[in-house]
Length: 142
Image (cartoon, rainbow, N blue to C red; front, top):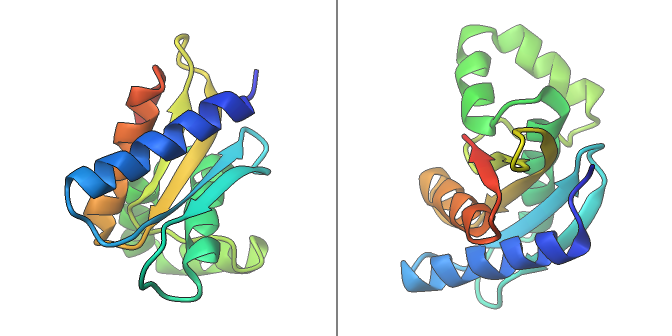
């Protein structure tokens, strides 16, 4: 089973609410299904780099594509930089191994998609994504 549009929308709205509650910078959040296809995305109003949508999508795609959070991928990149660099090429630039990309699991622990958030610090991006996933009644794998 893959993530539904209803679940993706709830994750996004709850992640944005968490970001506002925590007074984070405006964030962009993307949700991909278990095949890495974009399901939904929102970008908050306000300042932000022009590449925010691509970064959010790159975090989500990297997480689901490699089956682990982008925090774990960042650790891997530090240990195996050549391998990580090759993944950027393989993913045609859609591979962002920086915290903020979180796997979305169903009640049985199956990966049904991933969330990618960007706009604040990487740690805060991850906090917003996890909050959205958990508020939607799903599990986050960081």
